[in-house]
Length: 525
Image 1 (cartoon, rainbow, N blue to C red):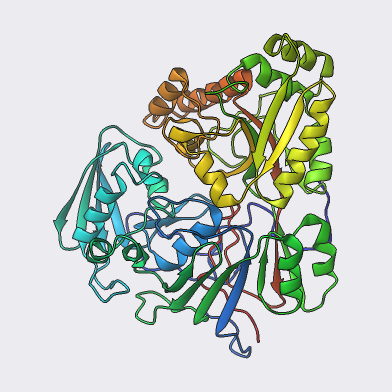
Image 2: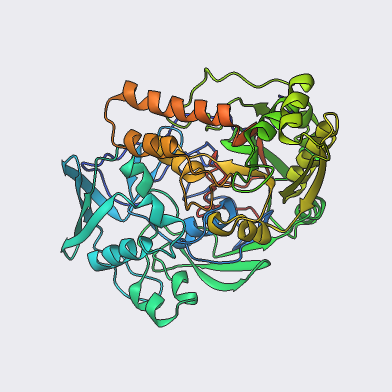
């Protein structure tokens, strides 16, 4: 993996704040002094001798097309969610420790019953006061069938009830070792019932966070303004503009000319322009964002195991990294996050074996004329797909690369209507072992291989309630072994992550799963 002289933010930097345990500590958003470490706490009080901009513009590489935390979950939407909503708790992505947010304390009264105390000084953006009833309604809304992101993650929630105005009780159907970390997911936002029921579209914009939505033009620009009635520390920035700029080069030029203050995911081919510009800084850190090739296992040719293995043994991952990621990535043999609980490092990579690949391909296409369409979106992933296209030509497989917009990509690959044959896509792994539910469980729109495997389902359901660590990790190891044997997902690499920022920018939490938190960003004039 290449290294430049960067403002390096290597993974696993130390946490710089006092841990607030579930049993106490002062409630509220914690404060700290290191704005850049993965999962660390931002500096909410930047240097007093610096004048900071009142308006900050972030150039995004992904479109924002719907503000609804219960139906959307990707990195760009999560940036917005973290600014306009609060959750019951948050989690440090480096240490995996849980901190109070809207919940001030909590206690497990049994293996399946959780009681939480709530803040009593929180108002929604529309002025309504937040109480336990809002929390109960939000979670009940998350469980409805159309809440496609949250409902599966909450299958284990049997009941939620208000004990009084500022306390709740959750009753689970079975023990869940990951429950507190799950509650910290950006989609588990607390919403205002009155606002949502009054307007089923913009009502979802109303949260309790440090920013509130001013305007949202789908697939273009989202503008947030500071919530001056926020219960926690007030951000330095008064207005936040997230502007979708699809082309890497255009995004970089906008940073260089000062039109934007943050350039998300600059092309690795253009990093030198940022390094050499004294007005800019280049941020680099290891990530848990995996680029993979997934087959739609419900339609030919992806439903043929021989075909999937043919592709697996035809790929040269080092070449893909060198060309597609400009060398800034690490290969992976297992479809599992590097910091995700239960990773099985004993999985052996397939390795390129063209003769074996041809044997498998002949079994899938005994009459020849082997063809595959790979759909993808985004400049880097398009390049990856094109490299795969050339590599598969060597075994007699003709590949068409179908480049689509991100919104169309999400629509065409929903679990119940999936149209793609295969796709090059990415997945940001979370820390809890049960995150495996997203790519492998039925009816998950993040299940891009459209996998329904009874043994995997059984293992997922059993592992999340298993307190014996050895038994639990063995279950997760078996899931990874099954995927490797069946080749549902072909893991390609974990990419290094980059951002270009105006020099002196502070206050950002650069999460390794790309769910960055810009709430306390401060950009010098």
